[in-house]
Length: 139
Image 1 (cartoon, one colour):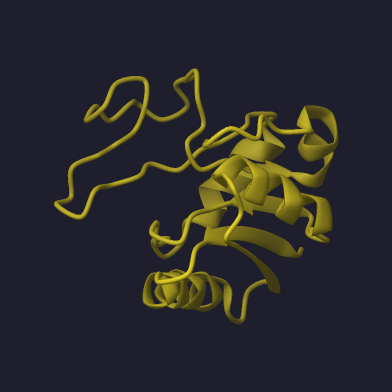
Image 2 (tube, one colour; image 1 turned 180 degrees about the vertical axis):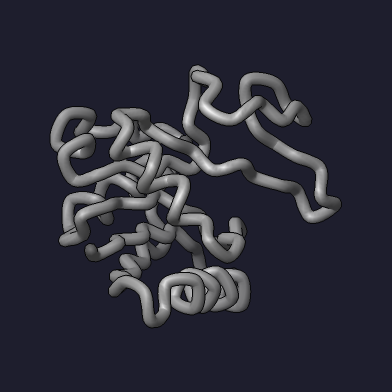
């Protein structure tokens, strides 16, 4: 299965982008092929995600950011959630280790609890065909 990862970035954030890109490549190395779709200097993250997802060839599409580094094994529960019919979003942590997930800032939700917003969406090709086009505001 091919993973497409859309990574918006802007000039001046090359080190952040490269670190995150390399983390995605390392996390999937030897397991699954990955396509990194960098979107540079777009007006909003939403515009970058839309443009990248339109070009994506993957069986799964992950709409990432240049400052959100994936943890090892991130993709396994995301695929599991898609196969169960959910639109998963990974838990995001601030540099100080404090969770930034929804439904409430700083609250860690129990596994499989529905939330009203996916901050860093991951979806299957089939789900993308249903939910596109994206809102192209900031997120």
